[in-house]
Amino acid sequence: MSSSEDRELAEWGEQRKRRQRLIAWVLVVALVLGGGGATVLGFIFN
Image 1: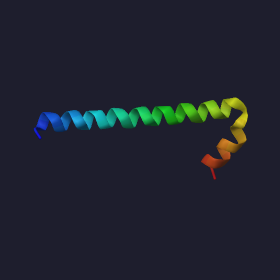
Image 2: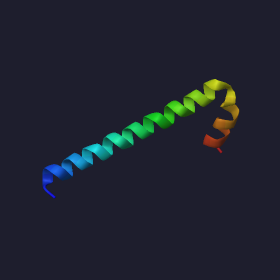
Image 3: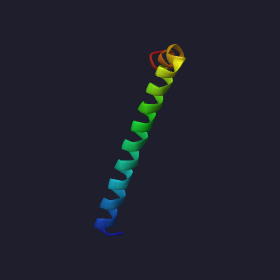
């Protein structure tokens, strides 16, 4: 593998990680606003 391929794979991995983190936070906020707030907050801060 060349260094440019390594760099592309690293960038792709970072983008994927960032996207997963964003989706997770959006899901948590949606669940809290959707009425399951006590349960979600209990899981997060337990």
